Image (cartoon, rainbow, N blue to C red; front, side, top):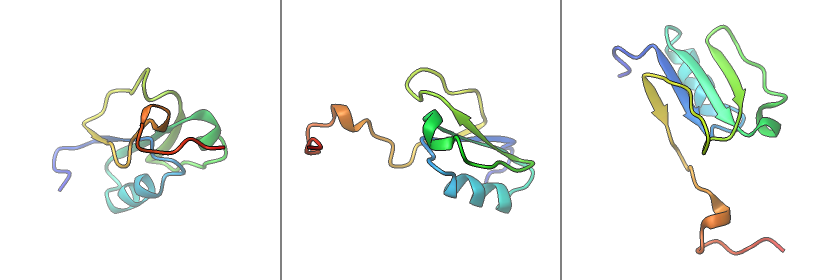
Length: 84
C-alpha cells in the first residue's frame, strides 16, 4: 500500500484525522490536508504533515495520491435540505 507514493493530499480533509493517520503510519510520505482557510487555521502540522487553506474547486497542488472522501458541495446538492 502506498508503494512509490511520496506525496499525498487529503482534499477537503477537515482537521486532518485521515491525514494524521497516514502521516504517522507512512512517515516517508509528505502529507497535506487541503480545506477551507477557516477550517485549517488552528491546525498544527508536523514534519511530514501540512495544512493548506484554499478552495478545493480552484486549486489542488500536485501529489502522487489524492483522497476525496465524503467530498461534496452541499450548496449544489438537491437531496440535502437547506439550513434555516
